[in-house]
Image (tube, rainbow, N blue to C red; front, side):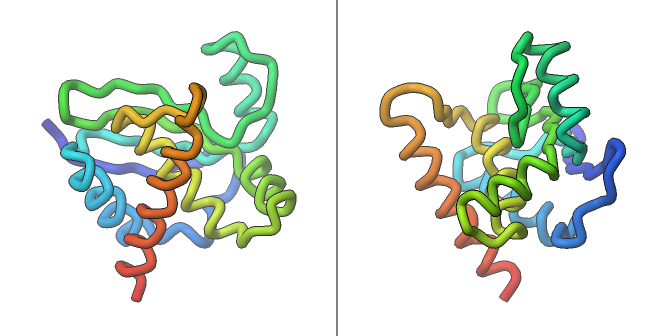
Amino acid sequence: MMNSIEFTTDGVQMPAALDPDATRLWLGRVAEAHGRRIGELTYIFCSDDRIIEVNRQFLQHDYYTDIITFDYCRGRVLSGDMFISLDTVRSNADMLGVDPDRELHRVVVHGLLHLCGINDKGPGEREIMEREEDAALAVLCEIKH
C-alpha cells in the first residue's frame, strides 16, 4: 500500500502556512499515536463556492463548512480525500479570534482524526475531538521547533 499525503488546490492558492514536508511528518505521527498508518491522503484546498458544491452533490447538505472528509480507510490504514474551504477557515479564525494558520492546521488534523474514528456530532464527542486536536497541534509545535 502506498504511503502518500498530497496537497492540491481547486480555484485557490496553496496556503502559505502549509509546509508540506513538516505537515506530512506531523500527520504521520498523529496517525501512529492512534494506532494507524498513512495510506493515500489527499487534501484539496478550495473556496466556499466549491465546498458548498461538494456538500450538496455528495452529502445533500446545503451549507458551508470548513472541511468535508471522504473516508476510504481499510483497517488501520488511513486513506481519504479532504476538501478544506480556506474561506471558511479564515472566517472561523476571525470569529473565534484565533491565528488563521493555527486554525488551518486544526482543520487539517481534524480530517485525519475523523479517519482515525473520532467523531464530533454526538453527546460529548466535540470535547473529545477538541482534546485530540489540541494534542495534535502540540505535536506540530514540537516538530516546528
